[in-house]
Length: 368
Ligand code: NAD
Image 1 (cartoon, protein in one colour):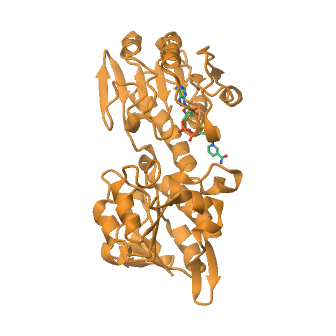
Image 2 (cartoon, protein in one colour):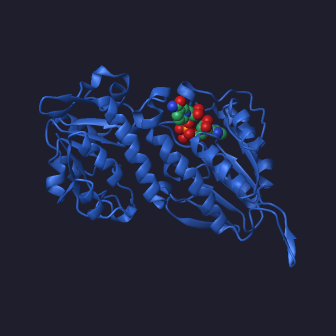
């Protein structure tokens, strides 16, 4: 069986779905691996390293003719049309709901007999943790968001005592304490900031405190815990109560990192324009929800804007800014997934029936 690793075509995407280290393991399992020329260059994995690992360097057409395609981002229309009937694509498909609910590209691709497995659908169960790309990439996003905030902030994050004077630690608030938020808290603590954090799921308070941050407690009259460990959307009254209760906490902050998301729903608005106007000039907001409408409506996706002297940072692809490690984590997520998907046949490795395992069953985008 052959595997294709294409170059990512989306503008600004520096990651690649496999690394020479993982390719070597796939070749060891009996796969013939084709890597598109230059696929790993932006992530600092040169073609020669893939060749040394046993891969063949090919053009895009040869790569997309493979039986199994490993990708990072949802395919473009042109890429989807290149996939062969009977082939399998494993990628972040970034598709909400089942096919038939508006994802025309996925729907048509599945109708042509291509099997689509969405990495974002890997269930959040213990057995699938090593395959969970949302977690590996969110971790990186949380780390990189703090680095971005520190670079835009005209003050120190840690306390400083020097002969030329001293500085207090920056007051940094993290909103949303899921995977990205907890990593942001840990990174900001390591950089010496005075970290405060809030999440609508009450169980996160202990996790926030265990990282040395202070948990912000608000009474909004509703529990935000939803299914599968995710948050649920709040009622309109609770949303308004939350915005109001958060306002005074946020007005004291110098740096805010927001990570609040609800699966397949617009991001909740946690920072109103009025709150931004109450912040001190020079404050920084890094909005990790920028691609989903933002936790602050003033955020512009993929832009850095200023409002009343406050800088709002709306990058939408932090993992791509740490492309070498992000690719390495993603490649290992895929390798761990393939461990449960592959069986050795007489003529080499083949894929098992996707329905045979709850993980691949959940990942599958079906026609109905
Ligand atoms: P996510 O990216 O969907 O959301 C980020 C955070 O935003 C969540 O913590 C959510 O509660 C919070 N949020 C949503 N609305 C909010 C609001 N109005 N105000 C404040 N915060 C709000 O979440 P995620 O990082 O993917 O994690 C979701 C859950 O999955 C967590 O409970 C996490 O621990 C769990 N998880 C489990 C596994 C596993 O067991 N394999 C792996 C990864 C994550």
